[in-house]
Length: 183
Ligand SMILES: NC(=O)c1ccc[n+]([C@@H]2O[C@H](COP(=O)([O-])OP(=O)(O)OC[C@H]3O[C@@H](n4cnc5c(N)ncnc54)[C@H](OP(=O)(O)O)[C@@H]3O)[C@@H](O)[C@H]2O)c1
Image 1 (cartoon, rainbow, N blue to C red):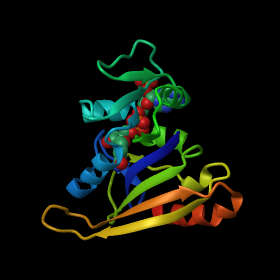
Image 2: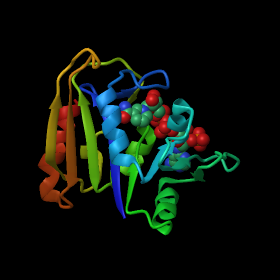
Image 3: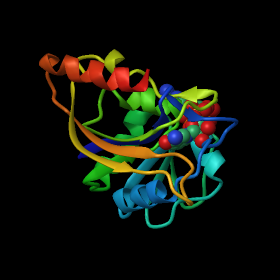
Image 4: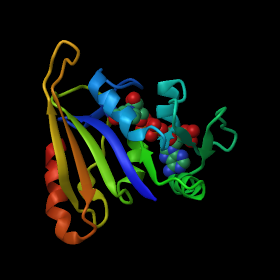
């Protein structure tokens, strides 16, 4: 089973503010829906509660340390590993880790793919994307890039990037590149 991270991060690494996402980019939301539909999404309890509902057309696994936590029509797992084991056991081909900050930190060392929307703004916030270069042995290669200008529906310009783990230490320079992009 493939494990992919999907995240939108500002130039300064910010991904969240006050429990929410500090921008609204409909075309990025559409991309997120297209990527994840029909698949399993794994998210931290914080993100689940900030969305406030289940995302239709996807299987949701919420990660929480609270053994009493439950979500109607979704699964709850007590670790990222348990969530991925469950998705694997259900025959999933690709599972998407969709946030927030703490789940991204857990997923970075083991993800195969990274769908990164770089939001071209410095944004104030209280949750940031972890430094990919800190992931052990992490090397990443940029496979695809698509720019989107700001317009009447998008206050910020953004660039969608698809990164693939190279799986070797020679890829460390790519990890540094990615890290630098988020500095
Ligand atoms: N820009 C983006 O692409 C994007 C995407 C998603 C979310 N966000 C933003 O990110 C923010 C939320 O991120 P966050 O880091 O505060 O919360 P989070 O990662 O969504 O959830 C944190 C919770 O996950 C559980 N958890 C974390 N690590 C765990 C572990 N090792 N084992 C078991 N459970 C664990 C804990 O739940 P319990 O307390 O129940 O144990 C913890 O309180 C929000 O602002 C949201 O809008 C941004």
